[in-house]
Image 1 (cartoon, rainbow, N blue to C red):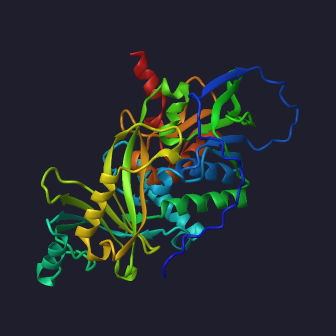
Image 2 (image 1 turned 135 degrees about the vertical axis):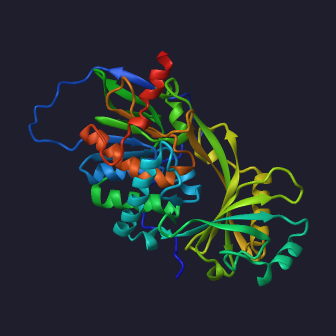
Length: 423
């Protein structure tokens, strides 16, 4: 049964006047009013800036644990990388590096969230077999397909729908260690749950500045003048986090522009749940490429690659794909499978997104040095969807309890950059 990517999601009508964005945000310090004498404990008010997977996961776990959360998104929920990513999940691919514990915790959280939210039906969660495959493009795509499609030329675990010139197959992930979600559906499903069951409020608007009172965060001000009071603010704006001047002066977050296409083959039932990590040799020669192919239970096939560092525009809606990169991905699709050739598969999307990367290639997760109550979560590069749940859960613990227990955040502390600046 194919999933229908339709989600119950609150409709919010807000004027769209965010096209001509102004200068980077800044912090405004003002005096506070007298503290309340109310002895009844009130839910901690938290403003989360950013409606992508990291921000939504943070809002979800904060609200589930009793916080009063306002989620602020400039454009629309999951409009950037969280809506255009592949949604590939891996348990142990980050082992041996600084992100290992975060990735393992988050992979397991994805599994439990899928059970809680019926993820297999609501956002396409499913385990996958993952293969590494070499593919060489022929000067004539039709001849390459016909010459390699016979069973005598097939070796190893290559699925039948991969009828192009695939060689050297190797299983690099099992259904125990790799899985997938549809990232946009995941993000919106999680937010719907948080809004309906835990009272998260969604506000559409651009955060202009974070306010402080007596050395503590007191809320945010939007570009249109609206003020949102908060005892804590979490900045989860991906590559746009650097637009806050105090963050941009502390660390560098740069963007990697990644391209993707989404195809809908006529014979979608023939496409099995095998993710492909390719070594693709172009017909004209040159350096091999490393595109990735993810069949989805929606009946779509997502293909991505062609990445390079790029400037981050003010508005996520301004990100457009490079036509040459899109055409290359279409060539990859046609080389891999006759089911993915144009005419046999409809092109549903040609797109690009910008992935946030830190200067040391390690995510930035924690309280901003010298600014009590202001937190940041960004720099997850291509693993943002994988690491969203554990990042959100850890941030919720840090904001509400003062420390995170689900994963040790010390390696991700933004204070590491402040220490480096002092040297």
